[in-house]
Image (cartoon, rainbow, N blue to C red; front, side, top):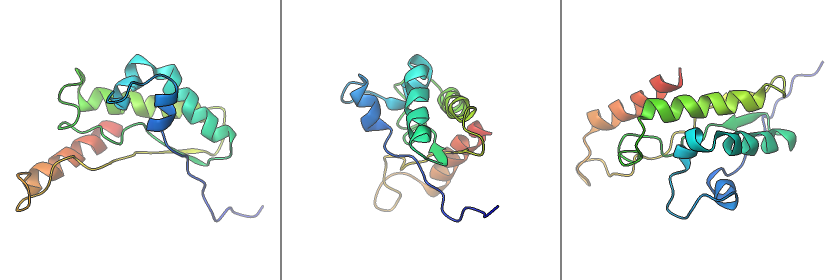
Length: 130
């Protein structure tokens, strides 16, 4: 059997969730908990279209961006990983990748975010995915 050399990744999550009712300005990561079936459905649609890897719905799941969400980073990331893994169950050999986007603040000296704080925020996301 020939080993596959190219992995196909999924597409946009936020725009798909908006099409399913996420309001403009809404927090997509909250839907990992409140609308898990819709998030899992988006993953499944990409897998059905041939994706080998789905990204978790965690692009903005850091403590700065999620401060007003009512949920912890751990809750949101954990739910996102569970949703993506659930979608992959029916697609053997597919994988889940943690999607980590920008924090939303500039690093010093251009902004007020210190390197150590940024590191801690990224580490928190990664630990929550384990």
